[in-house]
Length: 315
Image (cartoon, rainbow, N blue to C red; front, side, top):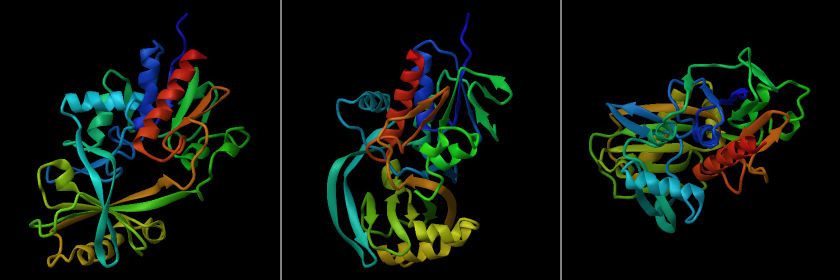
């Protein structure tokens, strides 16, 4: 008898990695997502017909890991490219130096395009919003397992108050918000950098040169804000544009204002602490994502989803 499908809620990279692991094991799987397109926090926004990354700025891959093999395949097919191993360091006074580390990868068509590539062959239904899930049932249909591939607070909202999983998930205080602000200028008038960590700043935590990571040289910058600043603007994200623009122009000594701008709200942008386990799986309900592993990252999200999918397939 054919097994009931596994239902995965969330079409970010962890949910899609989980789905691919199940599909490879021959298990029927269905993915639903409330957004219009796959991607999750590897999202991009079209500006002038061009994708701009508004979630993760880049990703890394530890050599020899299963995710590194996925990245190598993307690079070989021209979907991703090594971007930089150097990150600028800045504060309120401007860029003060740089630091080197692992290679950061980018994608010419935006990071979301990589999630779409992973989703090839998977049944993904967009625009589906769930109010509740329980073991063996969701969307009024039976399923062998329900996977919540999303931040802890969002997963908690879908569970019964009596669910043993709820006490293992953060209710929201352990997740930091951020506002992503995209700024398009008429010309590239800043000294070249790739991406920057901004320390001890009241507004900014990071800044990326989107034209540099895209490889087309477009004069587009994307800033991510501090959690306290984001908290003040979650109800009206567009209110963050002007102060962020002012902060970026000051940091890079830019004479002109941007010609185009936008803001995107991330209520649960990143976990402030990590779960020690790679995923959660209890009584037909699973949770995975970038909070389940050593550090919050794209590679952690993929590894969490992949490990959960393999565990379900073997159960």
